[in-house]
Image (spheres, rainbow, N blue to C red):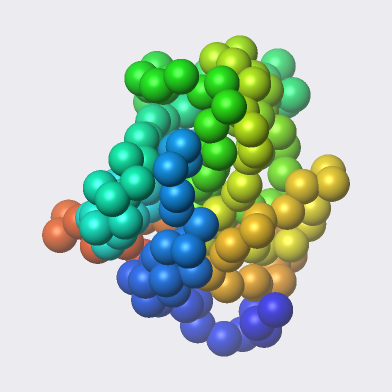
Length: 176
């Protein structure tokens, strides 16, 4: 884990690292699924970075918006930018690679798995996260992550898509 005083890592460099770690996991009967919104941005970029093995193995892809599956839906409510999930392939028996931007408690991942099972029973589910910020509350952890960072509970890491389509990280601090 890095120190809170260090500058944030470069999201573009982390994305390239994830691509090289992910490449050996791509095989026939694999699908990439991005979790809205940052995970979808990452997945779209990974589709380009890994175009050759994705084409070679016929890797399919889709998106999930897990808003309705979260266990804190009553507290958080509905986000204004909700998008419908788009899983245009048969999940049954697929090796699913979930992609998210920042892994924190594991609750978003749990919600994504719940929604995936509504589409069918995957053969396996793996998790890729750009950042693992610690704070896990469930027995879920990314199999691949670009970096691990320790943050206080009042610090929130956000992936930002810049006007030139590059990605960067932004740290927000809320009052406790």
